[in-house]
Length: 93
Image (cartoon, rainbow, N blue to C red):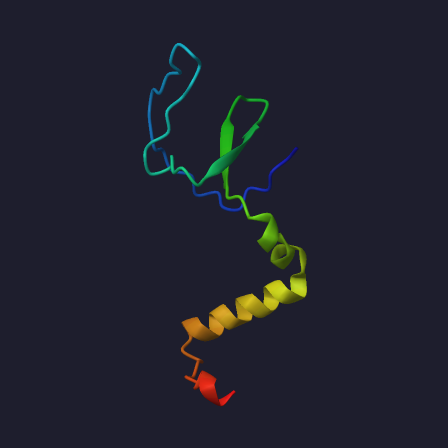
């Protein structure tokens, strides 16, 4: 399994961190959120990358599997962000 490095602007977040007796390394609280899981990658020099992931409910996965639907949703979100929205009266529909 390989990973594409999306950004190369790594910054140090800890120094001299040592695994505990059960070989665990504790993440800073800013990274250790309960809704995030990590894919772990390592290179031949022993450097490790944690790639944060979120789980998508199966009932919503179809959105991400359909590029046309995903594009429509992204376009709609962009419209909202740019203020290209208008109010409608749902009773008149």
